[in-house]
Image (cartoon, rainbow, N blue to C red; front, side):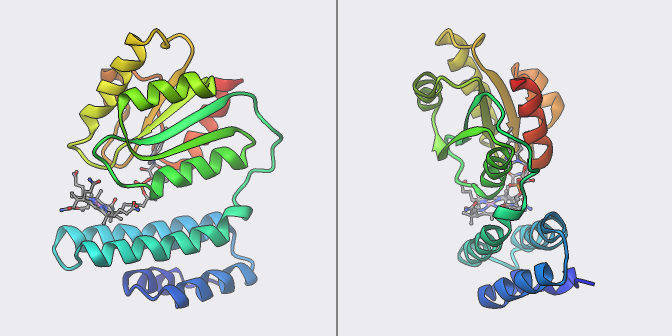
Amino acid sequence: MTDFTQIKETLVSLDEQQLVQLVNEALKNGTPAADILNNGLIAGMDIVGEKMENEDMFIPEVLMAAQAMAKGVAILKPLLGDGESATKGSVVIGTVKGDLHDIGKNLVSMMMESAGMEVHNLGVDIGPEDFVAQIKEKNASIVCLSALLTTTMPMMKLTVDAIVEAGLRDQVKILVGGAPVTQAFADEIGADGFAADAGSASKLAKALAA
Ligand code: B1M
């Protein structure tokens, strides 16, 4: 039985080496990769978020936690696929302009790749004009926008507007996500869908691409 408390505490204490060891041990004990991700790494990062909010942890430490989490995720990545065959549809995904958070967006990208989709991960701080250019260049049928800050959520609306103005609205389905984003917000800005986590984002994209 895997002790997720230990994984969470190790992430919070920024011990990258031990975290890698614990993730490997959990896999060896037969713990499903998705459980390690959700109950260990993501739950640990939630504690980091609380500590950040209470000023018990500061940016350099949060960055170290993010790096340690990325190492853990890299171990789990090959095991998180759903084993289904390739799905049609090219996806462009990025974190909107002004926002540098990429862990969740990378998880969404990873889940979609594992589901057989062709994913173009643009990175962070992506402006509306860059999304438009990449949708054209990659002939995308789905675009995923990620935002983790309430202050960058309006950038999602500006990106949707730019896609409309570029005449691409009929070509792409627009999906949005990120901790502060809700279905109501997605409806308000004229997106086609909202997903609360990487698994549901991948399912939704597959359904829309079908
Ligand atoms: Co930032 N940060 N941060 N941070 N940070 C938050 C988001 C915050 C909630 C922390 C807090 O105060 N409690 C807070 C935002 C408050 C708000 O807006 N209401 C905050 C703040 C304030 C800031 C700064 C402004 C701090 C400062 O400088 N004073 C600054 C902003 C920098 C910027 O972006 N311009 C900042 C900086 C950073 C770091 C760089 C240090 C680091 C990011 C490192 C990195 O990403 N490489 C960081 C981190 C790590 C966090 C927390 C602790 C963790 C975020 C995370 O990775 N979660 C976060 C607190 C928290 O969220 N609990 C916080 C794990 C990840 C798996 O979850 O990203 O939610 P998440 O992704 C999920 C879903 O949301 C969904 O699927 C994912 C997987 O299931 N999803 C999508 C995400 N994108 C999707 C797209 C989709 C669909 C689903 O498309 C269809």
